[in-house]
Every structure is written in C-alpha cells, then in structure tokens.
Amino acid sequence: MIFIGTDPRTEERRHMVATQIAARGVRDTAVLAAMEAVPRHLFVPPALRTAAYEDHPLPIGLGQTISQPYIVAVMTELLGSRPGDRVLEIGAGSGYQAAVLASIVSLVISIERIPDVAGLARSNLATVGVSNVRVVLGDGTLGLPEDAPFDGVIVTAATPEIPPPLIEQLANGGVLVAPVGGRGVQELVRIKKTRDGIDRTGHGGVCFVPLIGEFGWSVE
Ligand code: SAH
Image (cartoon, rainbow, N blue to C red; front, side):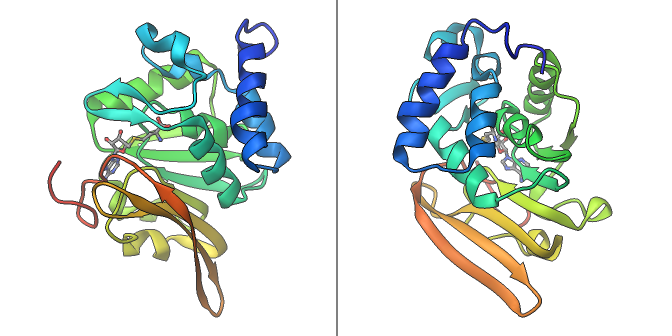
C-alpha cells in the first residue's frame, strides 16, 4: 500500500488497534498488523475522515455503512486466513474489509450488488494501492461458482440464514464468517467445513445492514 510509513494517521491507527482491538482480546498478529497498516480514513467519505479511527461504524452513502473497526478485526480473526488463501467477500461496501484481508491473503474477490458502491470500493482500493482485490458486481448470495472453491468466505451484510451456495463453494477445511439473524441484530457465526460435515459456532451479537438477494432478504 502506498501510504504505509508516510501516512500522518499512523499514530491514530496504532492507538485504535491498542485501545479498541488488542485491548478487547484480538490476538492474531497478522490481523493486528493489517489493521495498523490499512488507512481507514481513505475508505470513509471525506467529511467523516476525522472520525475514521473512532469506535463505531460510519455511513458511506446509499444507505450503506463501513463496519466498526473492532468488528472488522474480529471477523478477520475468526476467518483465520493464511498468506496463500483466496477469500470471497459478500458486500464490498467501502472496500475496507477487503483491503484488510488483502494485506494478509493472496487474493480477495468481493461481490457488491449496488453499482455505485462497487465503483466506490474500486476507487478507494486503487487510491491506497491495493491490487489483489477484485470487485465484482452481482448478487453475492449466489457466490461465484466459476472461482470456487474458496479458503475463506466473509459475509458483511445481515442474512436470515447462510446462503447454501456459499457453503458449497467453501473448500474442505475452509471457514465462513457471517452475521446471521433478523434485520435488527444478528449473531456472528463461524462455519468450518470438514470432511465429516460442518462445525458451527456463535461469537456474539452484531448489527449489519441487510443482505439483499436470492438467498438473503428480498427487499431493502
Ligand atoms: N465490507 C464493507 C461493509 C459492507 S456494508 C466495508 O468494509 O466497508 C454491506 C454491503 O453489502 C453494502 O454495500 C450492500 O450494498 C452489500 N450487499 C447487500 N446485499 C448484497 C448481495 N446480495 N450481494 C452483494 N452485496 C450485497
């Protein structure tokens, strides 16, 4: 990324990681390093840049949001990705979560359903010099069969149940993380696909905008 080392917000980011993320129990050093490296202020609207390192989600326009930094860190840690992995994200939004993942893995493919939001994600990622994220326009609840299987799948919008195609497109040993539940509050769910079946664990309450699509909600 272009801004590492020369970015005047480096100190703010270190503080964010120490007080909001490490202090709350995120231990994975690759995740902490990624959160320190990615310039979050370049993924929020210019008018909100001074709030970029605060402990909450922010609006990015078109009714969509960039998640709270702590939640991005927790979901990335739950995914447990390694350097050679290929990860599928559903809900590109600002592109921030994809950028955090892209600093750990080799390739991120992120599906976004709103054309203007997909354009925003692409332009934000280009601005910070991230070149290993592909933003694809479409209904992410269908996954991307032509690029499957994926080592990790991360859903960053609230879904009533995990879309079956996303489980199908997970590699053996792969991990999927998604906020599952109603339109107001959801539980963070982690699924690990093994030869013997599916391990499913819950990781606390979260609040995401809805996943709209064939296997998500039908209306905004
Ligand atoms: N990961 C983002 C935040 C995502 S907000 C970030 O780091 O900023 C949720 C996003 O999911 C929104 O942009 C919304 O348009 C998108 N979305 C909702 N339903 C979708 C679907 N079926 N396929 C792809 N994207 C979807």
